[in-house]
Image (cartoon, rainbow, N blue to C red; front, side):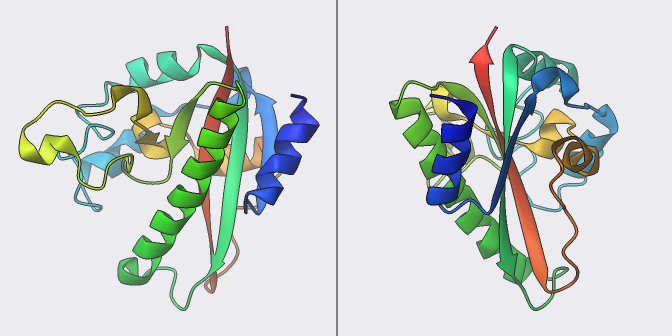
Length: 181
């Protein structure tokens, strides 16, 4: 499947903006891990896709660097108050549902990849970590951009996708790493 076809499928799947960039152009800044460690989302140590269980920033970068291309995906949704987590939380889940469905579609068509999502892994309704059990689907675990240390502002510059839509729209991002080296 060509890059153009992948981008067209993304649009058909409900992705508002998509771009494919060379994986070597991704910028990793390990300081972004501090956003995970601040535990504002409440998932630090409670989700296999989150730190510290997902791996060190260096290990996360090494996982991503095994791929040739990064398919950057963005959904844009209206919001009354972008700073209100009660409002944006469900929108992030909606984004991840749309993106995960699209990534599954790509995998089913033979384009295997590494998912990097917005927020904690949501492959399961309840993460087995919270129950003290091993991960049910380790091949589906997806960590967030902060866990990887990916600077979204610089990512947006690289792929020419805006990231700031003002106070009444929110853009969430995901990346699907493709083309294992």
